[in-house]
Length: 555
Image (cartoon, rainbow, N blue to C red; front, side):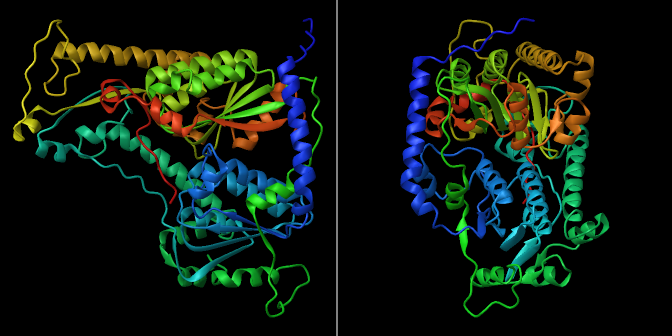
């Protein structure tokens, strides 16, 4: 095949690269004298408020809202610290904030690399749960406040059921679904899990429980048997956790800097008042990021775009101001070499999901695209990932859920109790098919069921084609069933297990870049804009949904 020489970038791109070079140089010239004075012996990672996937539009607003740090930034700091000779160790501040199963898996791997590089890792918490116990077990030292709590409990998945409450209110649900395991709307029409839903969720909970066991066993527990014993005897006061060896020391927060000073090589008992010098992750990142390097202005594109798709997939996502518009602009950008689509979504609107899927596919025709699934990439979240060149998920990601559900409520009897009645005139046999104050006829339900079946068939067909499987094989692992990432890998729904770092490494390979080459830039649709892109609650209730029925928290 004849190779085509790369095209020169447009004048606008050349100008933008020149300005970026100039701006980077001036920034470093001004900041370097101040940054060089920042201590870097112990880097503090605040995880007590949890972790986020995408940032707000403005850094100052981020600080004002006290938003949790970004997972990508935390992993970046840990990567820098791993190679920095001046860094003695990392202090993890843990707390009750929800981290998510996939995020903890990624953090645990990063902690392992830090320790292999000879860096000390200390975890500190006042109150924490499963996630804190897992990460604490991976640390060299796990300290807790003397009166703290460690809620190491195992895994529980609980679903609320509203059937009896709706009956008391005389509100009737109407649910149509495709996929034997598609249980997202069971909460409306049942009082307990169906046999299929229980089967699927028990498999998920078992795999997550095994991940927690493995995490503890690979750390201070030392064995799966001891890890199970720790879990089955929880929860703990900090003093109880210390007695069984789950926690190493009981330490007040103000004592931590002095205790860290004692961990310095060759130190015995530190002198009174001698404390380790701590630096926040944000400050350390400014120091540790590679200093200014001139980027070629006439070379090929070198930007790796990370596009974050988080939360419900709403109809506005398919607009020019939504994620589809963003993907289209990246496809046309002369500066973007490849794209990682970072997904943390339980799904949502079928049309929006399909429009994003289409945009991902068109983007993948021009540039390498790798989908990286976070805590959840299921139903519509999985749908949009299918068009990527490859899909990478954490072992603990919730994914799959290839199915469709439509749920609505009939309010006429409830409103009658309030003295509210409705009357209408209509033309057209099915003009009132979405009316919430009358029951659908069997003919109308049959029409809607046919639509749901068509959507499901199309979902399966596209998934089979994108994954290189037959429709029969794909249908057997579809049926609305939720899988963990490790399950999904076994069934060929994902290509590889790993996190955002693995996805970036893979997209570099696909685009011909050297390891760690290229400039990583994160993109996300503005939350402010997204709010105005949402459809009304009534409009969402009328339509079918690609929606994952479950989210399992780690804490």
